[in-house]
Image 1 (cartoon, one colour):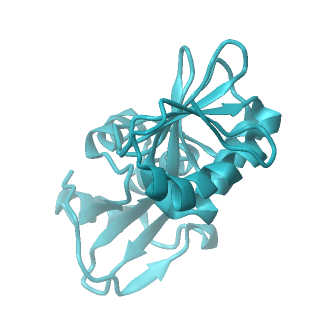
Image 2: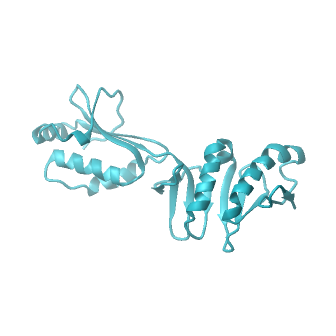
Image 3: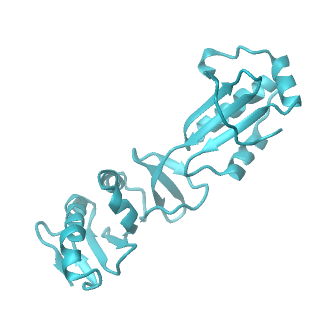
Length: 225
């Protein structure tokens, strides 16, 4: 089997239309090494994909290609997986990973999550904000993801959001030493809004290292300690 990145795509064929080319043709392609895998995206990891390739079994080349395609689709990490056939007689499986917005770290598991809150497998480290909590909190994660989606610059500034055993959220930035107290999950809409106000208006005025702790969960108040 030959796996390598490829260039131009000439003709695309959807798997949903059925398997139109004979087993004999695919057997010849595989003997000649004329099938390729192309992957891209932040979470693309060749060794992770290789493990799934080795796990695929089938009685014929065409069945093997179909099973491998289905295996990739079932992983949930990919936004698009499709089969492509070119006029030169080469076959490609093309896969693009979803775009994660943060990494969720739970006591025993960790995931990436995209803008829709979809859990993606943790295949390799990536420079994204870490959301750490004692349990999965869909409400809190949705609020945080929405904030990042609407304010991409803060996704780059926030390094970690941590929920302690009392349910209180704490935020940490890449560029300053303050600890931001965000309150409980129900306080996050207020706290996230006031975090933006603090970073845009107050921090440039008082300096990024003036406060040790900043309370953001009190309505219409930002308390610097």
